[in-house]
Image (cartoon, rainbow, N blue to C red; front, top):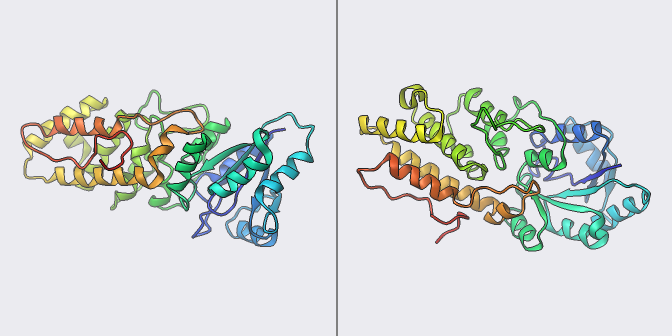
Length: 330
């Protein structure tokens, strides 16, 4: 039997709000449905953890193990030893390096440790730790669906735009009708919810996360769509029937040339600054240690800068995007 051990605060629940992280309840149910044994290992007391789960609406009777008088490594080792005849895989998912290190120390290769960005309490420290030790890292619950090989989703209607935007990192082709969906998760659903099901007034949460989209072309398309939205410009007016990324670029170039009075460049520069900030918030090292084995294009920032150069050619602009592949300051 496959076994999954989850941390609670920061991994299943947000460390501040104590609300479930979007898609995490669905992930736990999907694992159970697919025959996984799901355990919660927390440094809180069992009673406290159970209360938090009940208040969050997660009343499924997952076994809870408290490490308050021990360590997570010892707890997980004991659980593994008690089922030594199991032939399945075991994974431990946590957002804190010290807990991941504890399980690695006590269990060795018997348990696959996975650093999870979660509610971002330890970012970017977690990225540096995973990169240094060559451990797997999940940027969002979508990465966990993909990396653990289970199908699922979840109702996003009760979550804020900021909470949903944190699901963007790790999306592969969210703006493609051909390659946007995988067998485990529809990567288009997150941005569909944000861009076409919500009346957005603040695009900052999206800009701070789209730098982690795997496909540079989809990243560019999302950037253009959101900048137009922020300027209250109908996409049909600016882009027409544009679908491919280069069609976006040249349609936008024409629109800018015809409407020089619209300060759209200012919005692009603000968005680009937040893209870079969002990459650094999670930690650029995360691009090289994702559990799915897929990495964001190394030149994604330069790719965006190149497209902006085409759109605004004939004038001068000073992009706030670094040409660095990792988003760090030069």
